[in-house]
Amino acid sequence: MDQITQATGNNLKQQIDGLLHEKDKLKSELQNVQAVLDDYKNRYEDELNRRNHLENDFVVTKKDLDDTYLQKVDKESKMGSLANEIDCLKKLYDEELKELQSQVHNGKVTVEMNNSRDLEMKHIMDGVKAQYQAVADKSRQEADQWYKNKVDDMENQAKRNNEELKALKNDVNELNRMIQRANADNDALKNQRANLESAISLAEEHGEEAARNAKSHIQDLEDAIKKAKQDMARKVKEYQDLMNIKLALDIEIATYRKLLEGEEGRMHDQGITANPVMAVQSMPIEKLASTLNFNVQSSPPVLKSPTPKKLVLVKTIETANGRNFSETTNFSRE
Image (tube, rainbow, N blue to C red; front, side):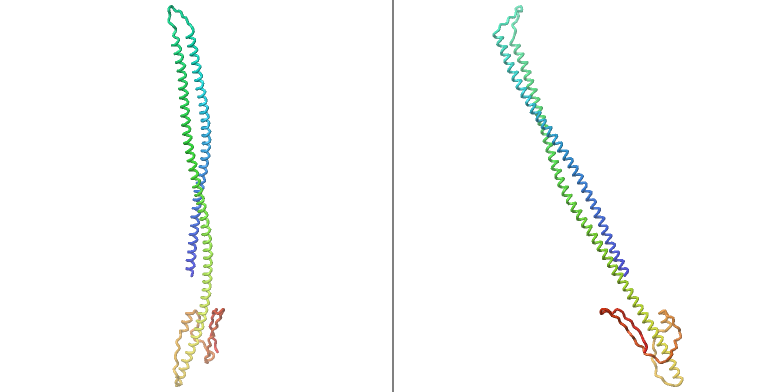
């Protein structure tokens, strides 16, 4: 019985240790999940800050692009003004040239230089015209080159801005996808955490219920052991009572046997024939007494009267609710 109780207790203890180990494991997994969730939160905050920074850069870039466009418009306006001014200068030059040619054609210029040469006014006018034309062409070329360079720079800047804007949009889309994945992972982790907490609570409830059942089972076993001990003590007491009765009967039988043997000897001496008496086999008194731990004298007791008395067996049975509660057996003499 003690071995069964100990085995049951060890089994329940192993179950409780297993539940505690599972609880620690679930707590460790919960901490790991919390760490992953914190990492995702930090990454989300970093990406959010990066997005804000890129949006600020986009605003600054857009402002620079607007300023560049305004400068382009201003330069185009200035270039138009310069072109108009060049046209005006050309017209003024042509008018002055015509006026000078008319004065030279209508007027008379006399130059006396020892039969000197005539002044080649046409050559001078061609030189002045070529000079003005070179200045105008140079200005036009410089304006065209500046305009072309400026347009190229603005186109390159616009391309870079478009590429940066496209990259920024891609980063924003990637951040949105990461945010969605982080939210989905967060929801999944929350569900996993709720499931783990539910499993921990269920395991604790099962452990407590198993502990209560084990305590109840142990209490039942202890009650059964106590009842068995009480029954065993009662049986031992009844056995001792029966052994005492048997000892008394053996002593009485031995006494009767000695009396009979003495009577047969006396009758034999007187020549009286007696019917044979069957010998009663019994255990020696000294051996029975030593076995049952009784102090009995070797000599038989002296009876007051040789007349044998009748033995009566009295058996008492106590019942309760239809079941035998106790049973006692006694001998009496009539």
